[in-house]
Length: 112
Length: 115
Image (cartoon, rainbow over the protein chains, first blue to last red):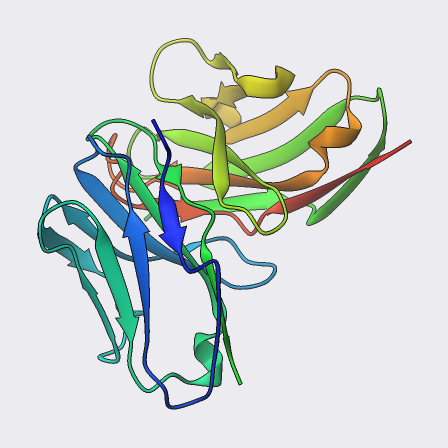
């Protein structure tokens, strides 16, 4: 069990640029989640997958955000035309159905 | 709808003292409750969980929590604080009956441990 891996750990980008983050879940986990966390707040749910199917997407996720999990393994989260308000820690978690979430160390995005 | 309230955004204790972090929840269905810990620049690590059965739940690092339905509480305790316990602690409730697909989180409590 190598845990949930997220890359990159940090990303600094200029407003208006596109960014993409990657999450590699624990290999046998069929569920994968994306959360966003800003300073002093708890995580906010963004979206989740069961295998390759995206089953729910939060209303927090604007059209500039898209997530994929094409083969039911790793997932990517893309933000287009970044805004300063997108600056946050983006957390990925995975689980088996009925088991607790296992989180990665997150990708910290700074939009300048 | 589910919600979580963590009382006290900052708690400071002396090394060796009792740790008590408070969590109250609201849920329209029997709740599944969790405590997670987050160290700086890291993800969240599960400390313990309550699903069904025994209301006193033991977790890692000497932490435990008691589910009290009458008080809608799930407070986290540790008898003797260690310097390494300094971190951010989050209480969460699972949306829906036993459904872990989405967790509703509290705002977190920052624990400081003084020598």
